[in-house]
Amino acid sequence: MSSYNPKLDWKYDDDVTEQDINRWEQGIADAHAQIAQLSADVSNLKTRMNTMESVLPENFLYNKFDDDLSTISAIRVIRGYYNEAQSRLEV
Image (cartoon, rainbow, N blue to C red):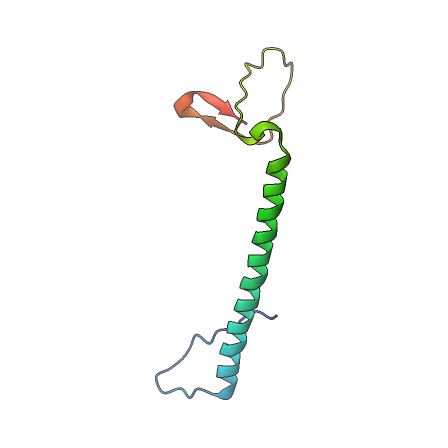
């Protein structure tokens, strides 16, 4: 599948050639092939995510853990944000 090369300099009286129509048709076919591949990828990821969620204990994703970190001497946060509305760090 090659990338689509649009003709962006059409003029009112330009002739439409067989090459133009073949380019359009190939672009349409390539777009449909890419959509089919993306749909399969999304479906696969959905299945994998559902499988992973199903093996987590007791709905682990939705449990809330609170800790004041008083017993930790060092911590490295690799993902999270400060929730200003609730005055807390969410990681």
